[in-house]
Amino acid sequence: MVDLFLGKVLVKNNKDRDELDTEREIVLRLQNRILMLFFGSGECEKCQEFAPTLKDFYKKLTDEFYVERSAQLVLLYVSLDSSEDQQEKFLKELPKRCLFLAYEDPYRQELSEMFEVQDLPRVVVLRPDCSVLTPNAAEEICKLGQDCYRNWQEGAELIDRNFMMNEEFDEGKMRSMTDPIRRVKYKVEEQKKKKKKKKKKKDGVSVEEEEEDEDGDEDGNDGGGGWG
Image (cartoon, rainbow, N blue to C red; front, side):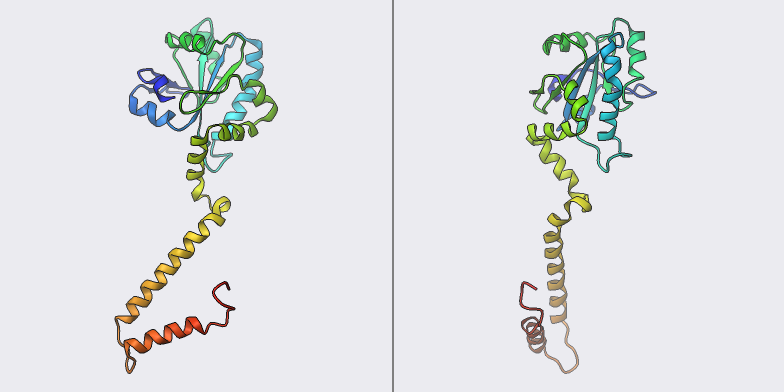
């Protein structure tokens, strides 16, 4: 996916219209993410009807007000508007976190031809390797809402693995997977404490006797054996 936009300029749909125009910026924004190419136009009545649904869909998956961790998802508006004013007007209906190509950028038309866009609205969903995951997800988004993103994750295995790696810090969801790690860490810390005790001599107690006492405590535990 990154290769598709190297050497291009992507613009953020924010107040300052910040540009991503370096290879590093493009890679950081697009790498290991699912990309939604939204082909539309403010002159298209169906696009105007679809825009609020798309905005809500994208916002609830990427805005940390709604989710603890933003989905690895990027929305790029590819304008097929007949004028720059029309494009600017329609951009106001789209999420502020989305990206777009400038009206004067001929790459808009190249992408339209590349993906054989005819009917609008059109949402082409791409895997990280640029292969098409869904040729037009507009209807799917309207019917399934956020649930269709889970379907995309299953269809893009690399993204699914990265998403789970990012989620490993979410204790509420991943507690059962991290418990064994915490138990191992606790065991290691206990072993370190025992080693420190062995280095010290207490009044009237030899190192060997202390080791036997510790082993005896473990063997004589009434907790029902090693399985607790």
